Length: 311
Image 1: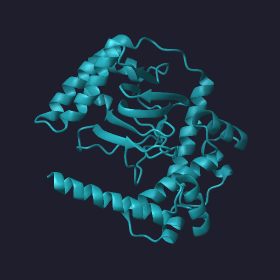
Image 2: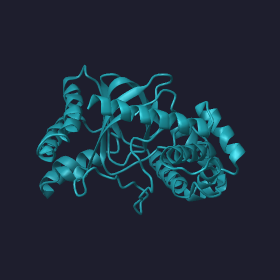
Image 3: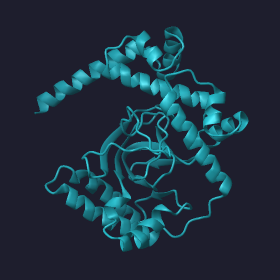
Image 4: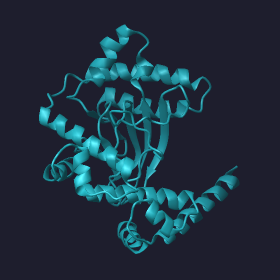
């Protein structure tokens, strides 16, 4: 899975949550139009943050994993992911997917302590509602889907930040009015998710060094058997498989953005040797690292030429 946003030099708070790199410093909003290639199923983009996340799938289909629940979204559908929920996105099998991705910090809504206490906190602190699937067949949800596209487009408009704030308030009113109380979350589920977040944060920080299954389990303060069971339940991956996914993702970033040799990238991303790295890479992507680099650069050059011609 390629993450929804570039998290190079990942910044983590003390509680291991991610600090999103916003589009404008001082204005906590992140807006993207994102393409997910078919058969892109790496899970290492698992992440969580204080921001709420709004997704609208406008073409194809995508799978979302939120706290272990797998939801398939088709064209015209979307999802609201509440604050601080563990989530990641993959393509839906052989289908590509395209989406609007909007991350907004709840602080944008907190014009006063009264508003924060009455309308914001009850939503983001509702553990029983980690997400809401948005369908265009339900009017208030269809309105939110429309709002997601409008929020993305506001980034290109004059006074776009003010327009975004207005739409965010309008969208939040729909959520607050319609979301209900949700179900009670078991203490065991909360404990497991906390441990998983700690283990993922450890992998994100330490992937380029030697890591054992024991190291990962210790990061979550659980035993090896429990560690493996938690990864299987919530991510459907082994801990070492997740680590490999993350290393591959970092390798892709270096292949595309640097002139480092394949051997240098191999060791930079924590693989034991170039031969093993190439074997794992080909198994996952159907081509060698050098072939992937060449194809990516050819596609990038072609895209630049087409952009120049259109201009």
